[in-house]
Image (cartoon, rainbow, N blue to C red; front, side):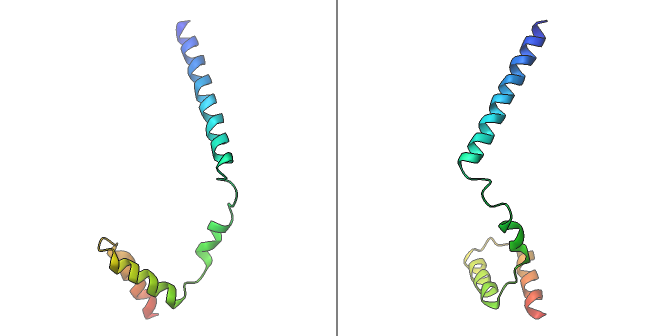
Length: 77
């Protein structure tokens, strides 16, 4: 019987945490624009964008070598 009380209190605590998380997300405008990030993958990069990305990667020596290889192959096409 004591375990039921523990489980009920735990479930109430989780419900309060979920309501707080939803309230926080709404108040911080996390749900304002859900469509634009999905469309950004469809936009073409201009040569200037690729050049700027390459400059940023060369300034950061810890960049991923696979990404730079992909960019070089993309430029070759």
